[in-house]
Image 1: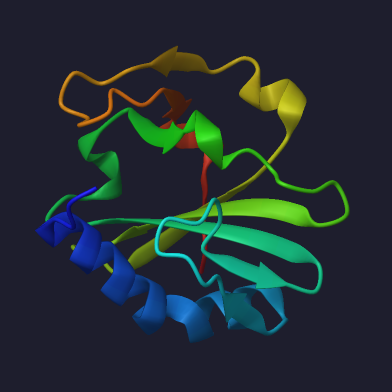
Image 2: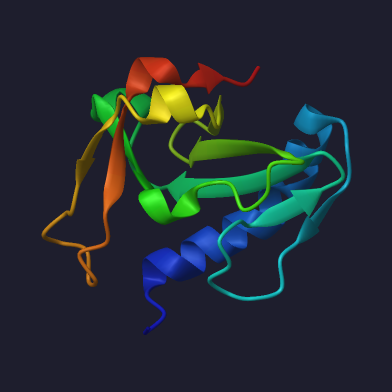
Length: 130
């Protein structure tokens, strides 16, 4: 897979936001080794995936995309997803809840290079981190 400008932006935000995520979760996080790992960070009690968006605000879209491949890889840690918007420097989170995720619509965006399946998660399901 070719690395795009958007990928580079996401990788940079992972590094820049690591401390903020650690502070929010109250634990140290380790960046996963592989560039396209299933999760971005691993902690003692959490698995973390971070999605970063630039030049838009949280209210720009009613639903936010999350690849269905980002399901938990273990049951002994809490899986949490973060969405970061650089336009207002906001972080939003959502914990994995299989019952809740089963209610979300799924889509294969035509613009996605591999037409990867994504959850369409309503914006109001996410909690803004203060």
